[in-house]
Length: 588
Image (cartoon, rainbow, N blue to C red):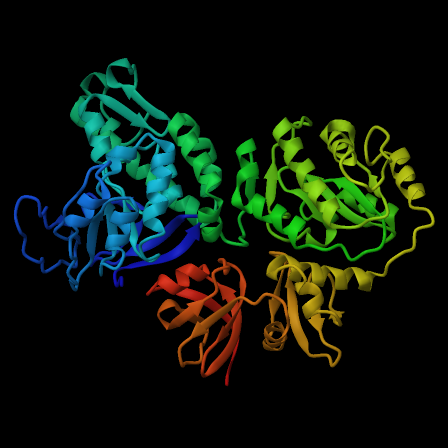
């Protein structure tokens, strides 16, 4: 149980947290001046330290190098005392070492074998994941002797909370000048490319002691940038560029992408920040893969009309763009519209507001890479295999889009028709689109609103949720701020246009619980929540809850609904922090 470390914000596996010393420290941070080491037990027995509110006390420990066999680790396992002060345990980063210390009453875990996997992408990722999944979620992870200005962002992105400047100082003593894009031998520098205090001397007077000071300054400055990126929810954007400077860092974040379950559990379902698609690595991001999986595994088309595929637009949401306004005018509710885009894949019109469909920006060159074509084609194929249409009208330009459609056309049973002459918005192209839909019956605006509500429920809660919850419904207000009501006029939910999700009322939450739709439940102790539910009050939570999910809160004295601030597994293992932002609650 931790009393001195609390996570406040999450950006994937990276966290912004508070280490509660007498002078609180915001992590990720350098731990050099924060540690009080009670020393190793290899040389002699040590007394239990009294602890210090000013420091993070590293309890007496036995450190093991990388490669130490499990029987040895088990034989020399340490019993960690409960000290009424901020404390850390030293562990080996494998199943035996991490699991053995998982119940230690500490606030942080320091990895003893960091030197054994530094520079080896798969070994590093395996080590961090092993520890993070073994120890309580609300404890800090300290990676000693590893950080440089170039790798700090990637280490934090993987899930590390505390670093130190040991490696940076050693490099400085060796005459190696560190920057965020690598290192240079001091002897090779004609001028100093930094404006930190240590670099405010003539190059001829800059010695190795100054180089050490500069390296520490550069590392501290990089951590300030990383903390800002976490606050903005945009650390991954930064890491995609920053990790290019060292091959093992590029390999590391790609290895992390391959660990989808680890990152997906920790990645918010929605957020306010823009997702920047600047490289093909973006295709492997959790947000992109999760959206594609839900569109092709949960979403159900409820229109009986043909499908019209159109290109995306720079303006988000797409329906507010000039090009899509022309498409809508030509279609006139005679077809179901879906947008094709890299890196998202396929976006049905009902989900155009749903994160990340209206929250991304991509590099537009007019040329598609093979990776982009393959990804979007795979999503479109899976989408058409799941949903039935009488025909597909591909109103798309030649660059990339048509090649994708032609590739998919050969693999599915539905016929394709192509309507673009030169460009989708030319007079001839729009006329072709209009004439191609001649004779098709129109659906009503109300039908589109109802199908939007059901589609959002499917996306948020699971396959079939839209029909289970909203077989009969009425909508009031105007899109995109739709209000969902039952036949008696009682409000069940509201559409949140910022994120493209539904926010339930208590009546809607009760209908959710009573339906066959998958329910995301949080079980609490005997109290009535007001404003938020903190982690200590939670008895249990469903595994599939993610940050930003709509959740039902139930206890012996209360029934409530709100939005999750932690994942379900984190709720169960945490002893501090806000778990659920409660919207409505009532005493039962």
